[in-house]
Structures are given as structure tokens and as C-alpha cells.
Length: 419
Image (tube, rainbow, N blue to C red; front, side, top):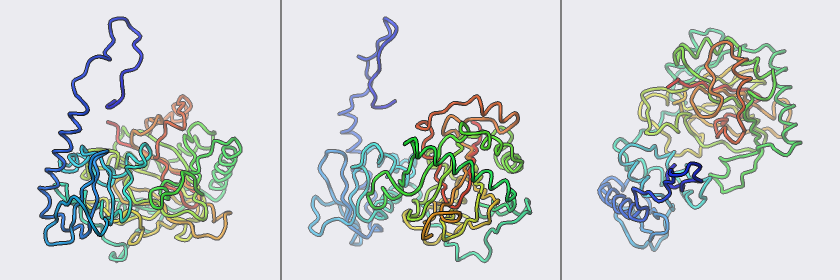
């Protein structure tokens, strides 16, 4: 792993701690020079940021990109103060330029390890700046209001598949009976309470941290590795809806990579917009590597935090200019027992829960499953699912932020194309 010193040597004669092929200080110097040249080359288009941006490469001297004139300029100082500050590794600038790193991933991916890397101020300025460094800057997705028709919950499977192809998402009605939804809600509620009582609950609101600089603590509760947390969750993986959609969309050799739940409680804010294959870098928009199935365990509405989606944003080189607003999206509303099925390329986010208090409709929860190798739950989507599931033992810490869907009580399974 880059930047990590070799560990303890166990075998005499196999100590490689003294071997190096790269001098970090020299590489940092070369990367900084290359990044400066790239920004200089892109000045003719950087006026589109229409603001002063402060850029810092680690501990080096801050410089400013001023996009307020007809052609952007690089300045040593900015009397008015920058609209946005960006502390970034110069290698990321190079990777943006070479189309090896998606800007909305590259700008924020180091935050949990280094808080100083979080852009501050008007973050859309930093996003626009990074977009303009790429060979093909994305277009913003069309607002949901511009479509004459949008997916609605239906029992017509063929219609749902057409919706997924056209819009990137579809809603299947009556996947779970009221009794089945109640069983799963009870299992999830009990598991959430047990984790809170044991002091191991994850009440993280990362979107709040990124947006307003809050703490890693918030109203939403995330439950990881459901595959290890009860037969109820294992039984849900046998639902025929999985075999109906996954082979059709991803082929016969897909794998379950994460199986998680989110409980979106009142007082949360909307999550930052993202796609679920953002971690695949270089970014590939022409192929979908995953599909999510979100089981709704109660009525999911705009008010209680329904997943927000940009319709048809799974197609083409599109990305929102501001990932911290859900304006222009549509809530994926559906009654309890429904399932939201989404293409992993679609731009979406957890919606804000505006209910006055928790309760049946106030603490929406989503059981979420994704197909993409992201955690230890890499199970073939084929029988015998339960035997395979019981053989897996994955620690919660190994299951990274793949449970990003929390709204009304729902359950999500994620599936990925086997590679």
C-alpha cells in the first residue's frame, strides 16, 4: 500500500525495508510542478469558476486561481479573500487531468483521514474547478421537473425494467406483504436497539460533517453486516425479486457485496449526492457495475426522507454541480413492502427526514444490498444462499460506507458484477 512502511519481517533474508524505487520528497516536488503546469494550461477555461479559489498542495505556499475576469489568472495573493479553499494532493490534479479520478470522489475521499483536505467555503467552486481540469467536463443532470413521466410503484416487472433502463431506477410494488414487512421491521428495530445498548451503534451523519463541519455523530443509525445478524435477514436474501433483476441486469455471476440498513431519523439532513460505483476509478460511466435493491419496510415519503434521485442521470457524462443540495431531484416514494431498484450509476442521496418525531413513519429504515466487491459479503447470487451467508464473518469495520440509503424503514441489498 502506497505510503505505508513495510511491516515486521518473518522470514530471514526477506527484509525489504531498505529497498525503495521512489523518493517521496522528489515525487512530491515533481507532482506539484506538474499540477501547476496543468492549472496554467487550463486557465482559458477556468474563468468558468467565476470566483477566487485558494489552492494549497500540502504544506506548500497557497496560491490563488481567480476566475472573475475573461481569462482566469494565477495569483500569489487575493485581497478580497477566496470564495473557496482547497487543500489537495497535487497527484489528484494530475489524475483529474488524465481522467483517472472523478472530481466528486477525489475532492472528498481523504476527509476521514485528514480533515484539512476538506474544501471549505463555496464547495461548488472547487467542484467546478476540478471538473474543468478533466478532458471532458460533465454536464449537469436534467431536473426531475423536466420529465413528462417518472417511475411509479407497480407490480408490472417488465415496466420496472423499462424504467430502470430509461431512468436508472424503478419501483416494485408489494414485494413484501404487510406481515413480512412487519417481521423485518421488528428484526431491524431490535437489532438497532441492541447495538445502541451495547454502545456499538454507528450514528454517523457523514453528510452533515461534510456540509457543515459537524461531528461524526448524528440522528441516522447505520447497521452493518446484516448477513451476520439473524435468520430474518438471511431469509430476505432468498426473495425471488433478487433473481428476477440481478441476472437480467448484471449477468449470472453477480455477487452480493454489502447488506446493510439505515434508519433515517428526524433532524437529519440530506446526504451528499453520489453514485454507488464512485469508488471504481478511473471513472467508467458506460458500464454499470452494480445494482441496489432497497426494501421499504414502511411507507416512504418525501417528508420522512425518501431516497432522492436524478432521473436518467445514469446515462452519459453527467454530474451535479452541487452535491450538497437535492434540488432538482425527485423522492422515490412508495408504500411499505415496495422495493426501489437502482442502477449503481445514478446520482442519488438520502433525503432529509422532516417528521416532527420518530415512530412508525418517523424513523424510516432501509435494508440495502449492493452488487459490487466492497466488503466481505462477496456471495454469489445463487443457491444455497443461506449456507454461503452463514460461512461469512465480516467485522463491521470492514464494511465501508456502502449503507448510504436511509429513509423510511427499508432494507437494501447490493449486488455487483463479478470481475
